[in-house]
Structures are given as structure tokens and as C-alpha cells.
Image (cartoon, rainbow, N blue to C red):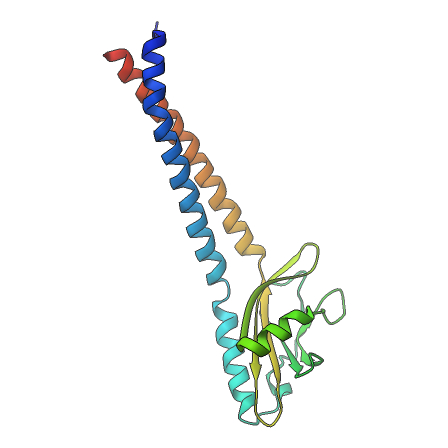
Length: 188
């Protein structure tokens, strides 16, 4: 039978608790780092499309030429969508619909984008609908904004899976490190 004295158990815990704290910290750091990489990377296609469209409109191209003819129901589709606004935030053209209507963008996004030129954000126009969105301003013969977004459904699944994998790894690491520490104390 595997029994430890009280002294052996206390010595084992003195060794194991700092290991458990370090393991927890490292697992948390790994999760945050990878989660942020996945989330930030979700903006990459939208950044490219928004910048290219804004640049073309700035040269005098018709903004409506860049709105795809196929409407994207953003609560169901994973497709990218484009919404073009005038300088007051009024929709000029849109390939996005939410429940059959144009989705509403928070007005603060336009204020921020006017100041910075571009805003990247997670947009939740209603519960259960989240998009990785990028809005870029354009100036030229007319001024306005280009918003490009896409569903975060698959990104959120990846992040959830990442969390489960790291949680499992954390439990296994804590369990094996505790067992090893207890065994080594008994062997002394």
C-alpha cells in the first residue's frame, strides 16, 4: 500500500504547489496567446478587401461596383460581406442582410474610424450573430466607409476546442506532476 507520512505529504505539497501554479500560469499564457492569434487572424481577409475597395473608391470608382449582387444572410453564412456607407454612416450599398434587413452598425464605429482611418472589431448586431469586421474610411470625389465582415462561427469553434485541449493538458499535467512528486517523496 502506498502511504506517506504527514511530513512526506507536506514536503511533497511544498514542491508540487509551485509546480501547479507555474503549470496553471503557462496554460493560461498559451491559451491567451493562441486565442488572440486566432481572433486577430480572423480579420486578415477583411482588411485586404476593405483596403482595396476603399482605395478604388478613392480614385473615383463607383462604390456600388464593389457591392456583390448576392446578398449574404449574416446569421447563417460564412461568406464575406461588404457594406459601403457615405460619410454620415448611411448605407450606400450592401451585400449583408440580417433577418431580411440591413444590419445596423454602432455609430461610434464611424467616429473612431474617422479619427484612425480603420477600425477592427467584433460586431454583434444581435444575440447569436457575431462577425469579425473591419471598417476603413475612404476620401476622394466622395467620402465614406467600407465595412467588410464575416461570421466568427468557425473561429469561435476553434477557440472553444483550444480551450478544451489546454484544459485537458492542464489536468493531465497537474495529475502526473502530483503523482510523481508523491512517489518521489515516498522513495526517499
